[in-house]
Length: 210
Image 1 (cartoon, one colour):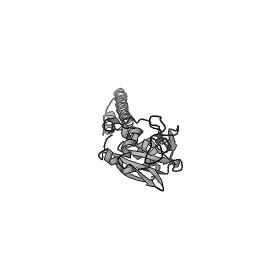
Image 2 (tube, rainbow, N blue to C red):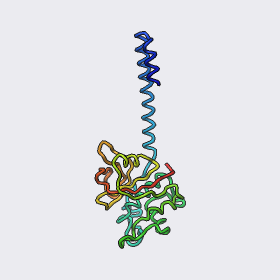
Image 3 (tube, rainbow, N blue to C red):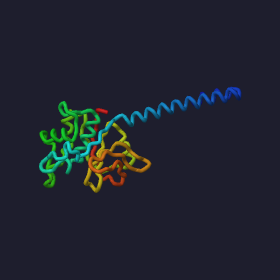
Image 4 (cartoon, rainbow, N blue to C red):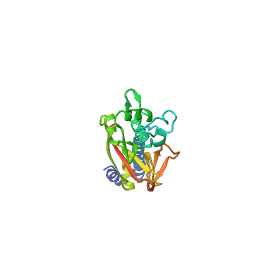
């Protein structure tokens, strides 16, 4: 509607008037575009996600389900801790870190045994910690790149990527379309981006807190 009104006015305007109106229209369009860009930028940077390293000496040697430490096998749990901390969740009066989350998991049946390894995170137990404000959706094979980007950019979703030949988990924090990959918080390696092709499957949570 804006453009059609502008064209109609230009047809009856003098040459000087036409130039003035065209400049005005461009200025308005530029202003609206700037507002839209600022709004999108704010939306993308709304969550401040901490980077927790599973081998941080504050919790590196804490035991998980049975015989492994956080430093040895705590990548998925550390990813969950980062995402919950970013949304302001707490364990009692304590900020959520790998240490406090692990302690809660140990007393709430948060680990299970699979093929003799009893340090596997029970993914749905997070629902209980957050009173279902964050709830487990699924662990599934990766969708197409466009769909996975959409999930990563949706602040109502928590996306944990299974990478390095299914040996490691990282928290996706942004999509990089130009590189066909994802910016991540890696709890173990000094890596901040992984290509889409390196992702095997994904863990998804839905969050009511954004």
